[in-house]
Image (tube, rainbow, N blue to C red; front, side, top):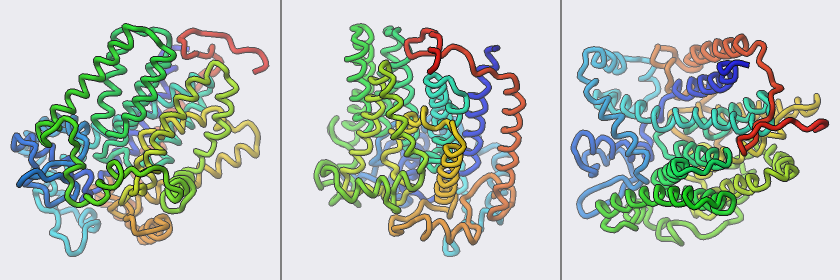
Length: 500
């Protein structure tokens, strides 16, 4: 098999996922995204972290004295700053001016706006273009890369292209990760960073200084992106100490991780007056919640434990029931004695995010598609399904098909319905929010909308593109073998045992 043949599934998975992600635009008028984008605009346009000029478009802000700042972890905005800085001069080009004028006059786009709104003003179009650009770099690309990593890890464990592809595509398209894969949040970037560091630490015995520094950088930036990532970082660091006790590797990892801690401390000290003071401590709209427990954390709550799993409000297994395959999948992992440490690591990372989410008095996450606070740990739950997702018998194939179709309807229904994330006032958002919007053709803004296609017709270009990509994958995969030696985490090639 040629090297190119080996890359065919990864290339196709990346292309399929990225196409689906970038086809839909980030939600407009979203406080969470606007808070981060305000910081990007303020730094590039005004040379300051103060978002005073833009604060009216968000309620997610911190107030220090008479000035306003984003109260979010700064990692996503830091990456967005060079993206917007490179984009900013292009707004003056004739081609960009023409595009902005056409957007302002686009009737299909105008139909997605509130009737009592101010319409597509020039500065709003510019704001939207900037949001699309920074979300592409900080969310869509990392999410597609996460899918490729999942394929590579799943294929390494089972040596099955089918299992690897199902895990990668099901995670990327049939979980709430899809809803945030092109949004200027920190969840998907954090997931990519943690999964990347996980892949590195289990990929062989090579514990070099460079590898340790890279793992530390990925882990450090994950905390800079989402503060709860510190829980996943602790799991991976503990694994490295217990399983890879190489002094040089651990020292490089620790120094690299500490560097990003210093960066965060300098940022917090500059704005909030102390290296250990977070923006949430200065939020003005959620003071009661943030002052309860430790920044809203009060310990696992029964209603949250049910609500995050099987509740109609935010249940991950209601939205993506195929993830239930992680239960038998974990048993298969356990039977592989050489994989038990990795099993505990994956469970530890996912459960750390799950218990964090269940411990918050705002566990539902506001306006949201599913339980968004667990998203950084979701790739590890998906990876646990690897050995169970292959249909070995007709009934198993039928059951898997039902679970995947259910996940498709629920996830895409909530992600595509309307122009906003489902408000937290709907106790059954799929029926109370998604269904009414879907039946009247109120579909999230997308590339088809820009082409003038209204409602569900706007999805035709996406379906055509996906069909073409699937055909290319099918033709390019002819003769693709699935009987190479299994690649183990140690990096060594071993023969498959007979009868297994």
